[in-house]
Image 1 (spheres, rainbow, N blue to C red):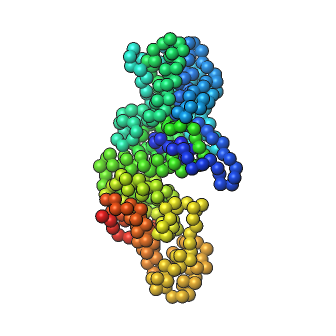
Image 2: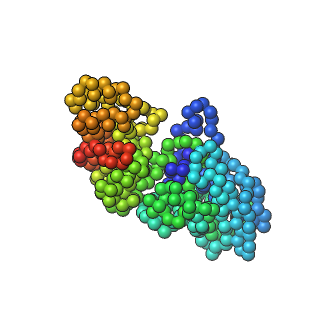
Image 3: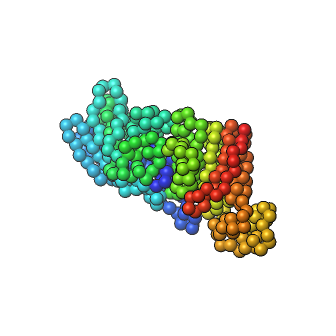
Length: 383
């Protein structure tokens, strides 16, 4: 998947990890915002240079595929033409699925080539560390290359010079962007035009991990020495209350502890706070780097064993083994006065430091309960 409801955030999302739903049913692939914007620009160029909108319009993707797109919008005036394509994300839960993506093409000064502008609903980059310079429309490098190629093809067919202004817009894009990481990354005013292959592969983890990586890049470019990687909103609020970190110091790690730590191993930031719920960090404490329930369940016996190590009486250990949830085990431990959450935090910290493999990153782990209270801490450790 290139763009996801949680990850369509101004970065080039990767495509990978398969397109199966886990139940053996193949999922339908879709098209990225970059592919749709390219199709719209190609159609608008056709009308600008030759007078007709090609419909459907065919474009060439980076992998050589040549999909055709039906036009949902056409308009033209003196020296300009505009076309639009409705994005089909296939079976991916993509925030931009169904959005109308338009490209308005007008003539530029001779020799300028393709000039990109952000129309309504497309963001502008305001912080360094992203693939596009500050002040530029949030149209990523691969979509830019695709659009330039499409413009060149249309211009060559018409015997024209490929000197045009391409203004990309997304209907309702500013509202949609509030459901993405764009504001946190400093992409303001709307969505990003994304894609590395032009194809959305449903349910890939790669785009989320890419968003984490761009978050690290932005934090490093801003000179931050402390970031927090959190498993969700509850833990993020807890760490903000504790440290008052700015928004661009917060990494939406989700279940991808391994992806976060491995990127920080190569691109270190001196202090890292990991903050997450007791159940998820119980998995990290056991050495699991993917915290999703499909990759590993909470091991209540393991938690009970840790209680025994902390001196819990046998009846409390047995109660923990018979519990239904990790939260219930935590309650049993707290009632017995046992610092089980601290123990989980310390073991999760050990997993993190082992994964960082000597990188110059000091790590602290904060464990929260379901209400967002910090119930366990590891203290700081690292090089």
